[in-house]
Amino acid sequence: MNRYDFIAVEGVIGAGKTTLSTLLAERHQARLVLEEFEDNPFLPRFYEDRTRYAFQTQLSFLASRFNQQRRLAAKDLFQDLTISDYLFDKDRIFARINLNDEELALYDRIYAIMSGIATKPDLVIFLQCSVDKLMDNIYRRGRAYERQISPDYLAELNEAYNQFFHHYDRSPLLIVNTNEIDFVSEPAHLAYLEDHIFRQPLRHTRIHLHPR
Image (cartoon, rainbow, N blue to C red; front, top):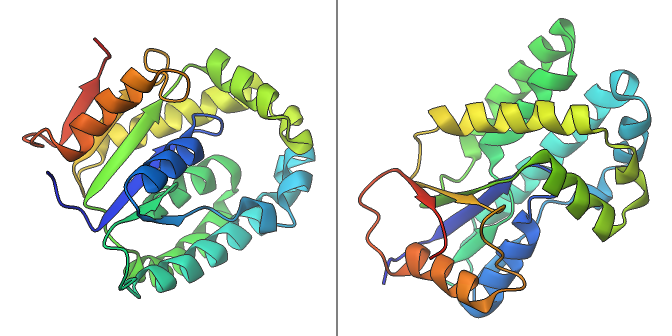
């Protein structure tokens, strides 16, 4: 069995990172840390007007994630493993896409101060997904403000995520193509994924999973 203190699950909006994090936490008695997007008062307005509300939305998320990272540093004595549905390092992906030059410069100064406390994962799971499937997942979960997300914006995010994780080397990286693996509806797929997370030796820093 692979021993972890901290696993982070990542992916674009609608990729299934919260669902997978929750499933893994329940099945392995782990502490679950979820991104507090519903507490961000600017998020619905951001999807209505990205230019006007990007900076406020970004700083609100950064403050929330910073507070969560501080709590992560306090290890739960009754749960050895923590699973989170986001990676603190990815915060800058959204900043680079949505902020203008002056906003990004100020954001970077604040981010540089906060990023020093971020917990480094023992494993990062990146859920890759096509834009069509992301749109379908977003539609099916039915959050009203997310209905305004355009395919073009998702495609831009998707490319940014792929580029980010193409160069990511801070932790071992497990890449899962969720167009080909359904860990919600197919118990065998979830078991296959768990086997690679917890039992197969992580000999390489990046592994692409495809179900049998």
